[in-house]
Amino acid sequence: MDSLRVSALALASFLFVLPAVHSWGVDGHLTICRIAQARLSAAAADAVKKLLPESAENDLGSVCSWADHVKFHYRWSPPLHYIDTPDNLCTYQYDRDCKDENGVKDRCVAGAINNYTSQLLTHGNSASQCNPSSHPIYN
Image 1 (cartoon, rainbow, N blue to C red):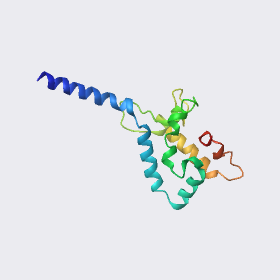
Image 2: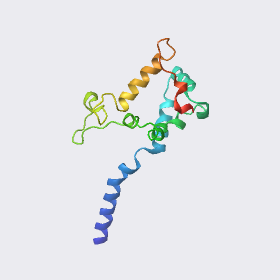
Image 3: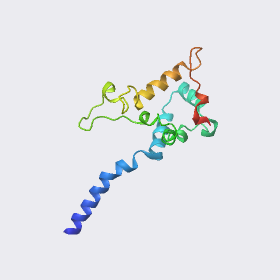
Image 4: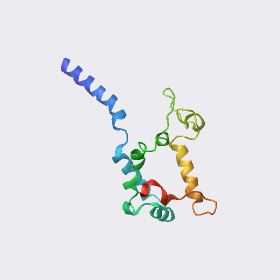
């Protein structure tokens, strides 16, 4: 009976620690991006192809974990990779939850998606300040 309790405790401890240690990882990001790329409209797929660096060989999945790597080089970027909701709540509210540790609004992954989507929608307009090809992903 004691070995059963020890095994159960070990399994529970492992399951408790696993999400914090493994997170999404490269495989999770790759899978999500390949699913997303397969669901793009023809026009969106063409736009993505033009934005990807040549080294990606038109595979969005090959660059999806890029943000995990650059967050150590661009100290301002880690909050743009997640959303922190209060532990005791099971809901997400943009105004409450999309801010960094200093309370700066729009500093979460949803804010980053809004920002970069807006930049892509205006890319090519004369007023656009966005130049995706100058982004560090291409270097």
